[in-house]
Amino acid sequence: MIFPPDNRLSAPTPLRQCQLVQLRLLKVLAAICAEKGWRYWLDGGTLLGAVRHQGFIPWDDDVDVAMPREDYEAFCREAAPLLPADIFLATAQTDPTYPHIHIAKLRDRHSTYTEYLPLANPIRYHQGIELDIFPMDRIPQHRRRCASRIGRILNPVWIHAPGQMVKNLRKAPLVIFRRLLGKHRILHWFLTHCTVPSGTHPFQWFQLFKAKVFPRLWLDDADLFPLQQMSFEDATFAAPANAHKYLTLMYGDYQRLPPESQRVQHAQEILPTTPCPHPESRPWPK
Image (cartoon, rainbow, N blue to C red; front, top):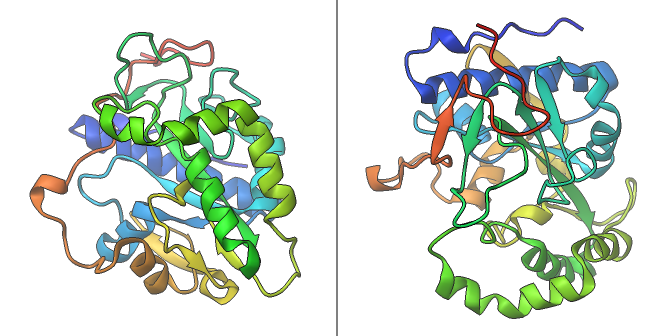
């Protein structure tokens, strides 16, 4: 496979340099998925950017894609040796310090992208500029409530965020439950008892990682497939068949720009040519 060149230094600001790195990560993922026959589609703010801006939301600094569970697991098993040398596939299997068991990330090896500044101990997992990969599962109607509850238990959004003590205290029972059972055991139970395989009807698509943040995101098969091609920056990528419904369930009136006070980035620090302190990082070639 021939992958696109890295052109981050052509951009004038760290944010735009980050976006160019993420665009390359997206192109690499799309090329590998096309080669292997794995399905993916633009998700979250990336899909919103494609629809509303035909590219990145101007202030956005992350890229999201989603995949059916079986394609996601195949990607996690087989994609690493297919990647360019400057991209690291971060999963719980490839990085012992990686905190998430139910999403994967492509990481740029040459950069630092710090979402949460550590309060005491340094963050040890790889923090290169990232692309998030979210699996989606088929959930039958009678398991919807159970799936949503497990999503709230496994939801890691708050764990590393500073300044959230009161909110975190309210979630203490969920934390205790998760630690007693273990997140791997909870995920295994979810996959065994809540999901159904391809060809089983009726079901709806559900994204475990975003169950708390986007509780209305339940999609019919016809909302996703057949996938369409959608322009994003200087390329086209796979997108859900019904992008309007997808975005409405996530954001409501998604065409309306948020107030300037809410136009925030995910990262607190972006260093496009400074590698993070991790064994899988690589120096920027000067």
